Image (cartoon, rainbow, N blue to C red; front, side, top):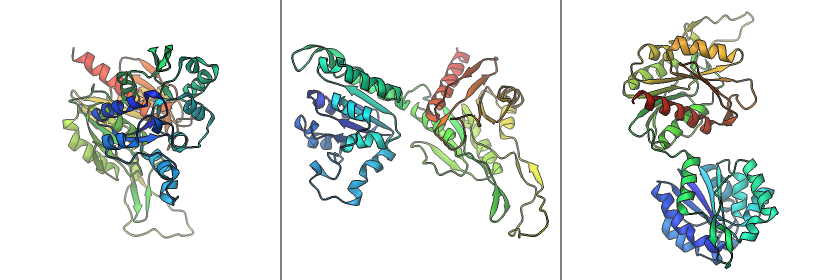
Length: 403
């Protein structure tokens, strides 16, 4: 996983060197970004030596002195797309104000606007600056946008005053990073099999039946599970998504290919999560040559595909089985019926017509249905957050059953 560490200008900037080491201990790949003011307190060479990477100090080159070129001009966009988290520590009142008001005048503030990764800030400043209404209003705005804030500690400050404003302890910052990234160890020693994406059923050599699934929910589950220490097997239909690091990826195309891959690997799994949008029907006979346009109606005969989830439910044994149900109406009724028919332990259901819960977006709105009759409705969350909420329930139920 990749973390961009923004270092801004304050006495606490030297503590960022220790923070780099601690992040590396968590097996995180750290890219340091420094503001010009930060370089008055600690040199880029220190961070370059710790990370083995070029430290970014300006929009177009070191101190903006290098000649501009296309590569340097778009570097902030490239990094914004690659990172899993942006951490700013220490975060001065100045950078908080820029973030809150969308001011992008240097690399770090531009990176903040350009990334969709979660953001963590650890403020450090004079107590009066910390308590100022402007700073608190900026923090309120950032929190409302989902930015995670690690509040400063109280104590003696470099200015000689006593109060809040001292950079939070490194342990507290790392703990927040782990929490936001979903890094835990509660799935260590377990194998989690996840299915994701659509399947495709051929009509002829150039056409196929499929659905609108992007695979984002399944890939989020795979990434969340591997971050929590699991050995993850990801059986995926065709998607354009990047495979999470550390995942055993098995690409498939048709429902039958997915069925075979799942059945082959299910024996080793402690948990199976069927998040794929598997085709329910396929052409009874695919044409060996392209079907030509004609003036008459074309009737396409379909036959049902194998029900992978139901097969797993019948042969579940001690495995924990999670199914997904994308619905357009009667969500609870259909989810309850699927829970019973398929032999699953949890059904994660959503109304795909609801805002924030459709296909090919980064959020979801789901309700979890359990065999004991419980229901847990989740608000609109990122798919990664939904994945962790689902895994929280899997871990809790499995752990209770083993006691």
